[in-house]
Amino acid sequence: MTEINIDRLAELVREILVEIGEDPDRDGLRETPKRVAKALQEMTASTRLASFTEGKMFPTATGSGDQVVSVNHIPFYSMCEHHMLPFFGHVHVGYLPQGGQIIGLSKIPRLVNYVSRKLNVQENITREVAEILMEVTQAKGVAVVVDARHMCVEMRGVQKLNSITRTTFFLGEFSQNDSLRKEFLQSLPKVGQW
Image (cartoon, rainbow, N blue to C red; front, side, top):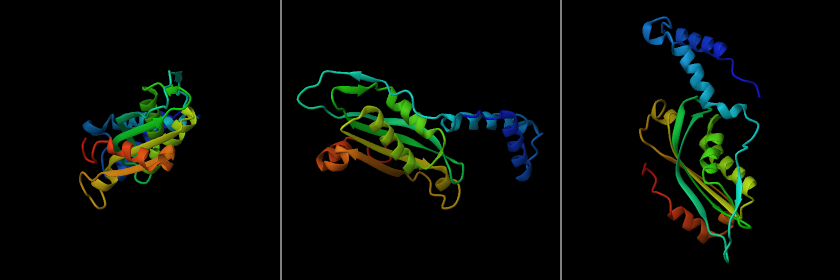
């Protein structure tokens, strides 16, 4: 994938500052174009990656039935593809291992980072985390819930502070088994408990 041209991006940020009526040469803004360019490079790092490559699996002893593995309250930050404003919150992930194979627990937050570090919408983050985790683990089922605050809702337009959007995506057993899905959902923190 192509790397970002930081100098060119900084020039474009400088042009934006001029267009909104700012003086990019004043003390407080002199270094802003370069800082914004570097921030955008970091916040969109996944755009330049071909795929998620950190899904290491490990064998584990299996009993009479595999149990749900859940990693909750994984913080994430992303940028709305509609307004290029931040949205942020927490991702809650559960999966039902198959055949005694589990994914390293640190790989799930890494997957959340991979999916969220690009221009996005919350619904896509929820779906992509679930689909990639299902593909990597070959699990019996995957459940993903995302709770987020959106600056495009809070800073502009309707301007509704502290509103939280919850999205869900279920695959395999979680989409077919109501009691399993309910068990997972009841284990989550209530919306708004940050």
